[in-house]
Amino acid sequence: MARLTKNQVLTTLDGKNIKVIDKLGEGGQGIVYKIKCENKNYALKWYKKPCDDSFYKNLCDNVKRGAPAATFLWPLAITEKDSDGSFGYVMKLCPKRYQPLSQFLLNNAKFKNLSAMINAGIQITASFRALHNKGDSYQDLNDGNFFIDPETGKILICDNDNVAPNGTNLGILGKPRYMAPEVVCQNHLPDTYSDRFSLAVILFLLFFRGHPLEGMRDNCDREDNEKSLFCKMPIFVFDPNDSTNRPNPAIHRNVNVLWNVYPPFVRNQFIKAFDKNLMRSNGTGRGDRVMEKEWLKMFQKLRHSVIVCPECGDETFFNMKKENHKCMNCDVNITRPAVLSIRDELIPLQFGKRLYSWEIDVDKELSIDSVNEAWAQVIANPKKPGVFGLKNISDNTWYRHTPGGKEFVCAPNGQVTIIRTNTIKFGTKGEGIIV
Image (cartoon, rainbow, N blue to C red; front, side):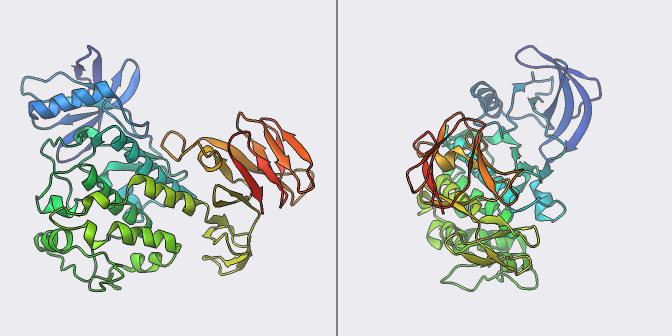
């Protein structure tokens, strides 16, 4: 049974009945249907052709183990096989407001602002850190795996049927342009290390709107490119020691422009990620690829480099170690807002800004579980224009200290006035000074 029909009823392995409502989409491997199960709507990916027993068993194992994070549209149940050996798996529906990553790359969908785009990068990276920490590898990471909310940058990851324990491969090598060189050359099967290469490609595409290995050496011949650009001689388009594959100015305009927009520490991270020594076709050096934790540290610093320009109202990058910086949108010279100096970071305290547990508490780290755990928010004083406060939206009692030694207590839902030179103890191991 290659295709399902409307109102057709199927049974899952755990004995639940599901009814087909409508077709949502179709790919090379399968067809996705909207279904109803126990009065709730879900999606069903139905395979066009029978799969081997190892693939089926791995999917069943993944259902039992559960998703590594809520961002994965994870298999929730598997149907029984029909007479032809075909089957499908049930997953949550993707909300309509989420757009495919491919639409952002084509400029058909746009992020609300820089913060939303950075949040997408954080969530993608933190999700794969959670996956790898469980001992699994994704093995087919590409631009078709992601749906993103343009307003917030929240993400959902689909096509999780190839996820398997690291070291186990079910026959999928990946999608061209996203596979690591050693996989393209068939010297290694996909695993955690090749995932990290593919993740770096995704992040580069997300922020620079172009492929990190497609430059002047791209001759548009698919077979030759797969051997040269992505396998035998991969060269990063901004390799500091090899300029032979720079972006083609007539084709890769976005990459050329955006490369100089981001702070130097971002550019240096991508230079490290696509170092020639980490892209050898025989796989040597693959163990030194940039890990998810390193990307998250970069994103945390990048998040702290964003402020809203008071002149044009758009977000811009700002070097918080400087008192003045030009807006990249309107070229107006901006004065640095008050910042919270904490954990070797300088966090701007502009109206509406939220501070998170992983920015404040030394025992917390940025992860997919803590990414949205807000502890503080900058608010305006309704009675005193131009005066701002930090609202306590955590469960901890804070203490503000003045240079003269006075102490002010701030209970949950209370607020402390943002005054330079004052110190805030956040009731945890986090303590910062406003400068």
